[in-house]
Image (tube, rainbow, N blue to C red; front, top):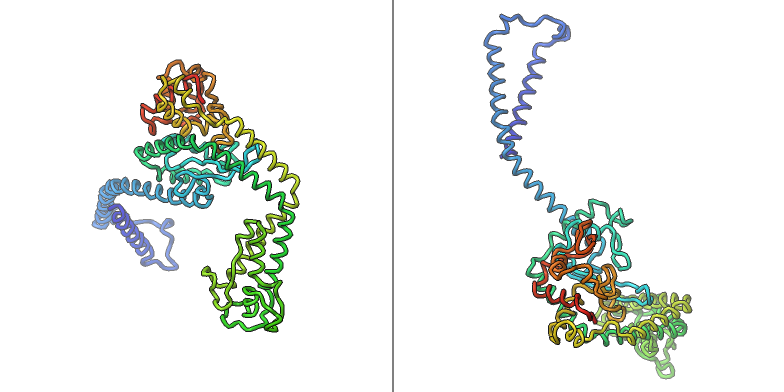
Length: 495
């Protein structure tokens, strides 16, 4: 409706302007005196039907404006509302682009449902897979201002970098806001968030049983890394030799017949796949250039990353590997060999330092296995806090491990081998030695805080001042689970 009014008004204005211009130019000659220098019509000449016509047109235009402006106003409200929707849709679309551009899913998983990020533990120098949280339910835990803070400034001592310009990141303020708009648009419902929290608790309980195996696996991986460094010099020489041989075969000029038209002459393919007996067939001995022998030697070398490249070609079939044209596959494998060579070159050039760091990391992991700080004596917790009820103790520990430990137990997100004692503190304060009972005089005070989270500058408990770091769990945990974890945290035994 408003668009029609605008069109009609524009046409009327254009017509009226054209009339004035035409009327002003009518009868004008080069010798005419300018109107402002000559006498105009007398009152008798003006006060006639011409004046009535002019006044009539003015009344009509006034009436048109009187009607069209309210009509335009009524349509403008809807237009503004639709513009706001369109603006929000564009912001969400741009936010989705930012999330893809800056590869948020690389750490937070496809669909931002949670994932892992590569990280190096500062204490041990060991490479770990840091558990990155889900983002499609984050507004059930934090408000927009708090999420903006994490996005702009990142989280120190974690893989989460600063993304906002104020935190020396690559995003300007508009990009940050658009990213927040997109995150808000993908939030799951409360029922899904509650189910996800319950799944986290179940997984955390299962993790209690597999913690020792996880630590053992970390130790084995570190031992393999040390073995890699120990064998790096001979493996580097081996890979270099085979890379040069393979490159010589693949990049040699075409000197023979290429019947299968795959870019490699048939003789080279044949000799690459089968050892030639020169005494019987009289063919030139090119055994050192045989691709299959090269890859077979790699397979026999015991260097897993390199031997995984082993492949045999059939010169009678241009696509013998089933992956692609044999020439394409061979060059691809050669490229992978060159990458392995670069890795080994770096390892050899920095061998003493890297080998020493790996050994220190292994010692750290072995000490972690001996201390077993990641373990829980559920029976002791049950006896001390839950009247001997192991099921309640297990559920309470699962709630803490699944939803609280990433902020209140140092190293938890890096895996059991790196976790310190339960409640040791990290981003959030330590919870051992009865601190919850000191900070909150009653369980009800603590329950209110856990349910609502903290707000920047707003006091809580005894002399507590909120920083906005503590998320709200009232939307994802049942009242029974809140009571259970509060009872656990206010008890005497945390592990």
